Image (tube, rainbow, N blue to C red; front, side, top):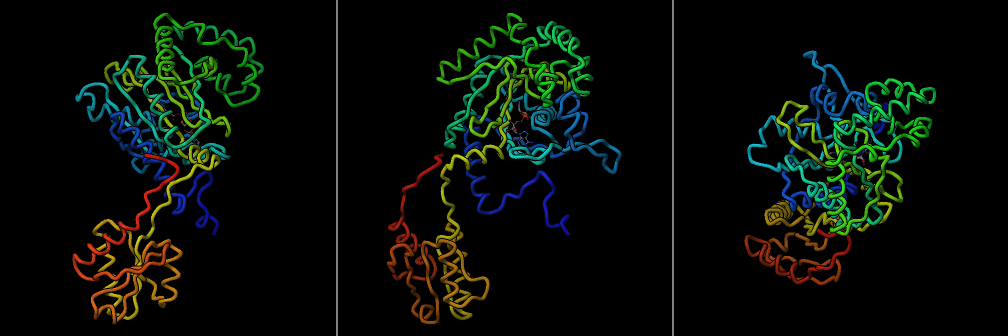
Length: 434
Ligand code: HAM
């Protein structure tokens, strides 16, 4: 039985009570993206496995250990997306979005799938808000997307988000660096885990973000990429810092930050939550990825923010969310004719965008009023034969107890309802702002 009453390990349901908070959080990210001229991209939940092998990199933890890969009935190797960047790059190329001119700016709110060991802040189905920008090689673009993420965190009311920054150079300056890393780790081979031993030849930089404590200890003393940057990469990184400083954004340079995905070049960054102890998001430049996928050489950059973790941080910080209005008007009824009228009036209110409800469970009048109270109705109205005959009913303000007679047919009903409800409106609102 457990198999059908319990969601798979590492997944969560987001149910009413919680989903309203998610909508508020997502609205803030959506609006931040749109303020910055990004358009939404929706890509398939599954892609050809090859896309992630080539894009994310076949020596990364994500590809080596975490992908949900299967063969479909046509014998193709398919993978549930473990992240959003590779699919966004493919969609940009496949749909020729570059034809509209650079920069191409895309954003997504999406689920991703990684076979990880579930724990606080680590899920197998996770959700991300991400942005990807193509065709902007200048360091000002790096600073702008970082500022954008921080602005959204601020609008959400998150106070303890840091910014860690590094540059991991370009393929040119990495050649020397790889040599130095190989030398360093070869001399300490016996302290590395099996996965890292296999990475030593193919991609020694991956050893730097291995999760095994032994490898992490060895990595502490490894050569730092920042000492190997070429002049262009150094200048780019200095400019990014200059722009961030001009924007008043504080950051910490972390020469050990290499990120867990292979496509990055130059700027990489993460947003740690100081109180929760994990990253709320991360990103960077990937100037070689579009070409890797068969496009013309095109610079790219972006970030992915972990929505599940951000929600944890918001809750831990007890950020106030606006209370959703489930029901503004509840129309109670007694008898068949009144029930039909209640249904019609409720529909009229819905047409005007007013959340309204009526009895759907055959409750008695007392139970209907109790229910109206439970769902937080601001106004109630009781319809019976007398009201139908008079063509009027009392609209009760549940907060003040005040009752006003209003018409119950046609446009008069809406006009009267709007007059009474507008007079009673409370415009004060705390918490997250839009
Ligand atoms: P990432 O660092 O792998 O980057 O993931 C971004 C964020 O997703 C993480 O910082 C974390 O908040 C969240 N996250 C990752 N894995 C999990 C998990 N198992 N459970 C809960 N949250 C998780 C990327 O995915 C890149 N595509 C970001 C990017 C976009 N870079 C450039 N453009």
